[in-house]
Image 1 (tube, rainbow, N blue to C red):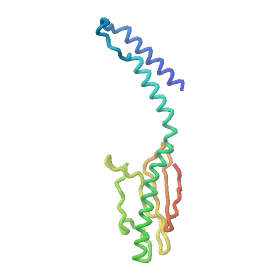
Image 2: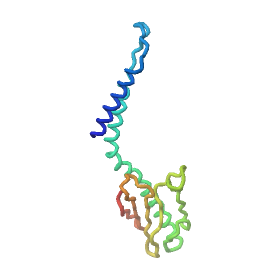
Image 3: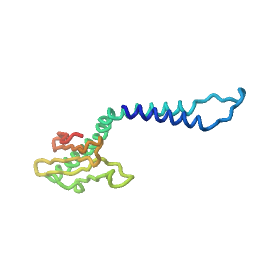
Image 4: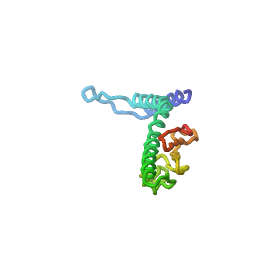
Length: 162
């Protein structure tokens, strides 16, 4: 917080110094425009920046929660495809393409990609399967990547919280 106060003081002093050096022509009373000074605008911008810095850590868990919805939806889709595959073949498959799942391009692969989770089937047998969604992006920057798992009974479990 001390750094923010010091930066505000430095900016205000810099603006005051520039105002002293640069001589603005005097306008007569009829042509004078009402406007905000550069100092006022900079102070408002600094205050908005400080408020954003204070609010951002509180918003990160909401961002993570919103992005984890992608994992839940993809795992539900895999569970549905596995169930359909089981009805046809009397076993579960470990191959995503065999059940008809197409992984979207991951956000780490290209700029136009938007998938934040890599989907894989960890285990599959005649009686059950486990699918996993692993985040490819660290949403809150703490070094932990979010991992979700779902089984054949649609039991969803967050293995590694982010």
